[in-house]
Image 1 (tube, rainbow, N blue to C red):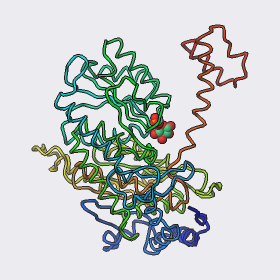
Image 2: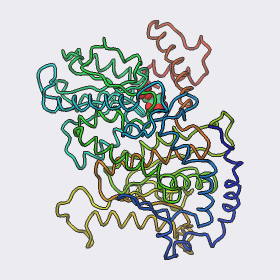
Image 3: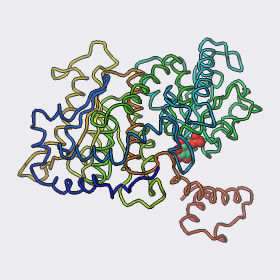
Image 4: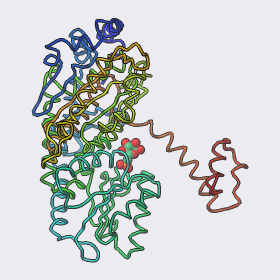
Length: 542
Ligand SMILES: O=P(O)(O)OC[C@H]1O[C@H](O)[C@H](O)[C@@H](O)[C@@H]1O
């Protein structure tokens, strides 16, 4: 996939010119949002999914040029190539077929080495059968009890997306099995998890594509010891989700069952594979997981088939590029006015920042433009009482508000100030977007708000497996589109390797010291800070 460098595209040159003019007062959002047609002109709706970008710092001319950018970068063509299995992850020589996990691969003939759909269907049937047997107690624990809890042992893409969906869904669907997450190598993470479960009724799900990730392997050892100390057999309490051919993909392993994930689905895009499929089916049943997949599929179809102008993930990617590369905002906040979506921002953080935080183009040239921004967020209204001071008067950053029309809790609510809690929530969401855009003049400069701070508002009707699937696939498609337009590979993550290598060197010194107390950090060639921290660790105090 060779393309003209991002900055050399004529649309980029035009957008740079337009961005310079955007400092003029007539482009202040307080003026632009007065246009009665603005919401209609700058919003899109698809299947219960509403995307309002009318409070972004754009006008018709900018939109036109952004659409030219998408065309010049061949964004839609690349998206189609991705879903049909072409090698879009060129540095790792792999396809990126997360969309196939929701039954979507129009031209499987493109793939030579594996029958993608039959492999996906095989694993899904296995998940369906296994989760049904757990729910009906045909599979029981070592001591003959029904399972009540399951702990996902995994990190990064092997848990974040699943945690997001589980946290959201458990608000509207009572889980059959409660999920817990053991990700961090921090022993206190393990300590917290075992406090929350009964060992006799707990299933442990090791999820690791590589089956070499240090944290996951360390936690697995911890769990095996825990099972042994509780006289429980791992072959009744442990299951694995790992890539075909990984060190963990060994039929001789003493586990209850094992499920495959595949090279053609990247970790942070793997929620709809067995990575999310197994835990979510255990929690809510395979039928709910299927409904979630259907939601993803609907958004995938929209993302690939809808013309640029009405394509929600594509437009959203273009606006993100406009904000980062042309208006030079360094960050973006995701603020769901829905506490059930509390784990969305951590998931999108990995999805977006690991996919787009790159230093080279597709064809290996050093980047000369911005790729990706800092993503952070937490639910409103909480965010208003923590970091929104900075959003309103400090360094500006675009905000993505997310609203849910109908709350899950539908019993009579007590009103306060003449409105119900949910209405209060919405009043705040609407007000924040408006305040950021409008600003406020005040003679007292401490009370002066510049305004002109951009935001989007995304609205779904309610939390359902389908709407959550759409939300997940929306962020995936938008990330991928952004990567394709920026001319980078959104599927590799070499940037996480250097820290791992250094950790392994430091680990070796710790190992030496564990084996030989006289091992002296001063006598080896370590920098003073590393020596200081290792001494502190071994001294047990500062
Ligand atoms: O699934 P695993 O192989 O254990 O990988 C877990 C995670 O760790 C890596 O370091 C990557 O940064 C992530 O993209 C990945 O999701």
